[in-house]
Image 1 (spheres, rainbow, N blue to C red):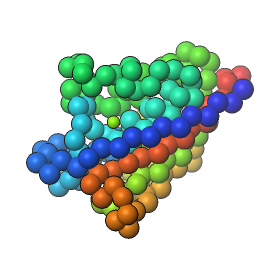
Image 2 (image 1 turned 90 degrees about the vertical axis):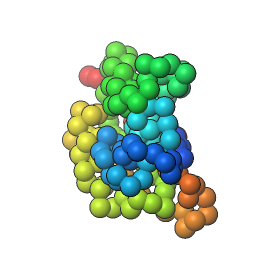
Image 3 (image 1 turned 120 degrees about the vertical axis):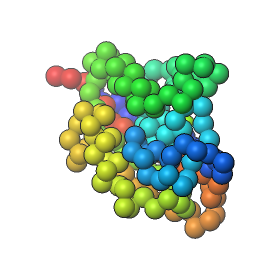
Image 4 (image 1 turned 30 degrees about the vertical axis):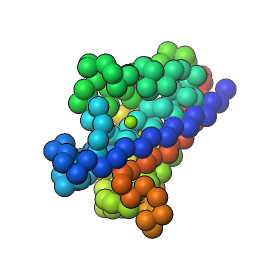
Length: 158
Ligand code: MG
């Protein structure tokens, strides 16, 4: 059996933010920062929600509410790991993931390889099963932050 999931997330830039910008668990800028209760890793949040959605689990906001002080400045890899645990508990494995990072800054191409490597490591799949695209909006929308859309495909473990 196959299951597909989609995840979306968006975070605003924090002009006064001190926290370095993390995407997919990789620090990609020390000049830009995103607002958020956890470490604001918008890519890991969207990917986590795609995994949870594919497995028919509650979404990231339900499992890790921003009102809970436990998740303040939390490493978002924790959220992804919990989503994976739920995926595997239901007898699924990750087949592939495809993610689009929508932002005008920072540039994604120089950090793409590093992010893909880290996502593959976190998901426990080879790097050729993770795809990442950076898309600018030409200023049309979201110049104030970063949005991410991810899809994942799960399959039942034989
Ligand atoms: Mg988020």
